[in-house]
Length: 135
Image 1 (cartoon, rainbow, N blue to C red):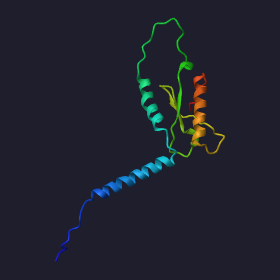
Image 2 (image 1 turned 45 degrees about the vertical axis):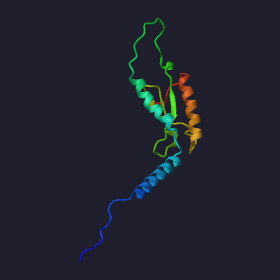
Image 3 (image 1 turned 90 degrees about the horizontal axis):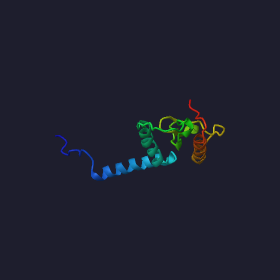
Image 4 (image 1 turned 180 degrees about the vertical axis):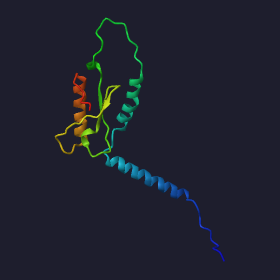
């Protein structure tokens, strides 16, 4: 005689909901553990900056001097990397150039608050005409 009971295949709706809740909880835990990055600023920086670089600027007829590199507007945002180097968790861009400066290298482990403050200071430095440290 064979097995008269058939094994049930698939899963119930409750099992699927529980699985989704577990996946959501793990995802939220990883996000929280990684310092809750500023997703709005990071999303906005990655969406708007390539558009600025791709827009074709029409030359205007003017008697003023041509714009210099100092007239660019720099933006530096906290954008954590997956490496263990906390000093390069900032990304700076001006619409055409994107790079990661090494900030606060004299401190062994940098907190998010410290790196955000350093990023704002570096952005101010660049917007004041400072030279970017591009490697």
